[in-house]
Image (cartoon, rainbow, N blue to C red; front, side):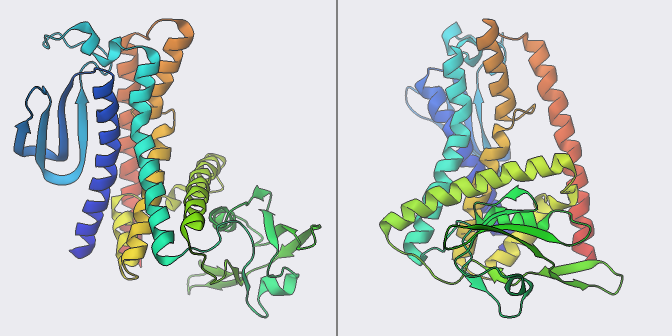
Length: 352
């Protein structure tokens, strides 16, 4: 139950912050906002502020929220508003600012979280410098040493530890990994590493051990925390891009993705290690939410931004019915993908 409450709060905060970004910029650009809601489902509490037409509501299910803006695609006849109150009638740059505000807030939240995490508890180096090598491990035997910088693994650029972890998880049939390393003297060398592998009774790969890591040195201080927040934000964002590319090329399967059930398991594991891990996971998911919404896919903010860019290029908006169909089909595809991912999560849950 505690894990479920933590997950609901995390998702609620992330989506609320995202929608609040849309809300603020919509208000500033003069777009009419029908309702700003915290939660989903039936309304359990609502109010209006003096001289403010927006309905503020609290809804039954404490997951997410929404910002209902007038004319997100086309003017609504039942609303008796002046034309300048509809989002669809705003200038392209204004629509762009409204749409990008959500992901901007997600990135800002993540930055603040990473900064506070480092300021309070300290932070390890995020760049791809080797801080630890286990004696007699595959990495040690290959010749890679503490202080070396991992430039790439099997051709995948690895300038941060997040990318190193992704590169090591990519499909590799012969289980051999080519490391390109910058030595402490500035020279570049290539190493072949074969990890130690462990299989279950059915012959399925359980784990691979390389024997190296970031090390246990923690950096502290205000300036370091600012630097860590920037680097961590960059690292997770670019790692998400790498994951998307590898999904399309087949080097990562859909089974590497998780839905709500998979997230429940991750939150449960993180909660075992305390508040710091929960805080970090919130920042990580905030970057994920921001990145995904920037993808120019139907129903995402990125898909809507794409139509704003097309409008700017051609000098007139795309037909509303075309854009509506585009987002509707995209939403259906997303729901189908979510069903597949959720099914995988359930299978994993019961086969552990």
